[in-house]
Image 1 (cartoon, rainbow, N blue to C red):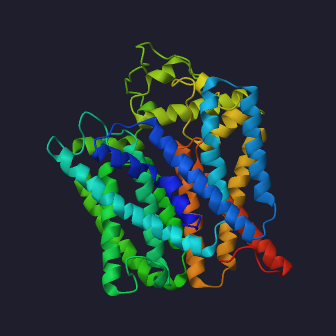
Image 2 (image 1 turned 135 degrees about the vertical axis):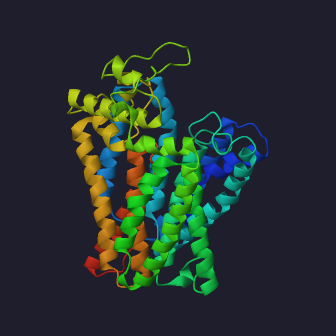
Image 3 (image 1 turned 60 degrees about the vertical axis):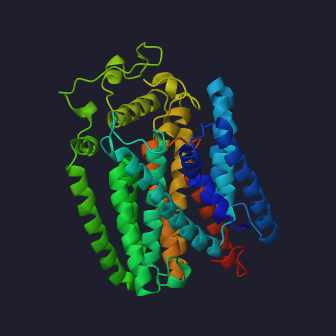
Amino acid sequence: MRSPAVPSAVLLYGIIFLFAGTYFSKVPWQRAYTVALYLSVSVWSATVVFQRFGRHRSSFNRIDLLFSIFLLAILLSSAINWWDGTAEYFKMMPVFILVPYALGRVMLGKDGYLLRNILIGMGILLLPLIFTEYLRVLQYGLPYSNSPNPTLFGLGHGVMLSGVLLSATFLSLTSALLSPDDTRSPLGMSSPSGRLISYVTLAVIIVTMGWIAPRGSVVAAIPAVASLFMLSPKSASKQKRQILLVIALALAIATAHTLLRKESTEFYSAILNPPVLDENTTGKALVSSTGTKQMMSILGNEACETIVDSVSDRWVHYRQALALFLSKPIFGAGANQYGAYACTGPGSFPHSTVLQVFAELGASVGLVYCILVWKTFRVLLRSRERISELAAESLWAWFASFFLMQFLFAQLSGNYFLSAGMYYFFGIAANALDQDAGAVRGSRPCTSW
């Protein structure tokens, strides 16, 4: 419990189990539950972080500087463009920006292995909960019921949260299977029966993701797993072939299952043929809760009328954010001001952190954010290259691929006020720079991987 890996996992993915617990207990959801969870995790995290900083030497480095500049830019822009909606985000910023960054900043090597194992365990724990829902909806037309995608645990975003965790589990389990040191992996992977169980689990995760259809998580997971294969040690070539075979078989099952249902096929095919780009599509105008049309897009009323599903909604968001940036390229429209120029209204965001930063904070801050992302990825890759131990090399390959997945998902559903996964990896990279600096000075590094 003293490891930052445990509160990190709870902070990033624990909310889905709280949703599931209240759902199956038939307890009405209260906002107080969310507050209690994240407040508890914040206090827990603060204890762990202060304990670690008291034991290990840290120095202010380039990533710390870039992160500080970016955070100060958000605070300054928010203060200049203040409104009630920004106040709500301010309440969450310590939990979703500062806490994850601080946790990443004190991660040690043993914490990395622990985090990977915890994510595998959390995904496996989630599978029977999803399967229970599978049986429940079976009686009235699985898995779609008056909705383009299934509702998990009584929540529309239950699918997204489940998909994000399952993607992390998929990547983590693949990494553990590729690692040459099976003793640091769960499920007894060092034995033939343990590896067989792991492969079956991997297949079940893929099939489950195909059923619940978390499209954003799937799109982010594919290149992340591909990068993991490229970055993993060459000595794992046999494991790579075995994993690819398991993935191919699982995808065949998931695809066949999808093709059997018209709704599923249409749901996935929308990614390849977004309605907003189809000239023959006659869309519905976006309607607010008051029954009036929300026509406030910087693109004009016609853009709002093309929104018919989540895919077309994303395309409109991206185009609006780009248009807003081009109209205010230097300093942007102001933090949390994108919604004033969007079909979805005040408080909304373009579902892409890069586009949101450029649209709201301008190129002056957007370039800082892009450099921060690039520096983080480069540090993770360089740390992998400098490690001599194969197990540690595999762990850093997982970190780099995991960060890539976080970044890609942030471009599909992200909001820079709430992108805890991104800030967590910024912190990990800043900590890795400390290690490099300690090695260059010839002193004992402040962290041990």
